[in-house]
Length: 195
Ligand code: PAN
Ligand code: ZN
Image (cartoon, rainbow, N blue to C red; front, top):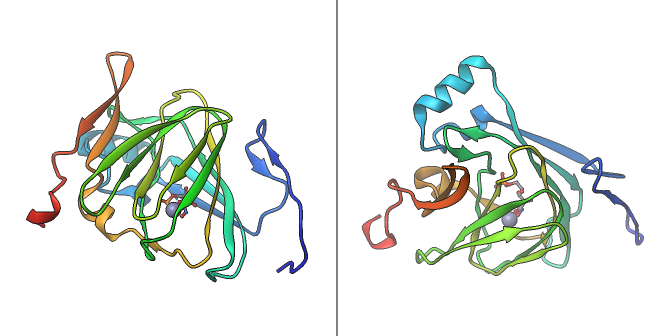
């Protein structure tokens, strides 16, 4: 752990950090049950277990005064008509925000609050997205031939709560239909009062 100020570089061309401590890989099997089209999921799994996204993290203590940061790379592809995406999560400490800076590619962030309010905002190169406290978030790569690369920063004590999203998903799904990107309802999603 470096306890002096430090500098590193984000290479947009290679979608990589000049230094990092941890490299996480998430494959299709890690998102079992998260895509709407189970038949398309099984067909893709029968061919292998494609890499959906990777995260490069710089290690910092998980303390409120720290800022965790790193690079997220979502690869291009579809499961049926649904774009490759991250699992998505609430922060365990709900009142913690996050900033994302889009380095490469194009996509959207799907977000929602515990009360069921939702938002879908674009990622474009150079764009900064502010995810306020309380909003669950999932990155979706809508560029079918290019990685979506974002740099993220969030409080060290935030933690990750994947449970709600694993159970019923986000309120909205992002799909590729008739040559365009569409935002559609997720039929499995339950309003908070019905859970
Ligand atoms: C990001 C995400 C990263 C991977 O660092 O963790 O993009 O997404 P999942 O954690 O949903 O698999 C972040 O939002 N951290 O809080
Ligand atoms: Zn987060």
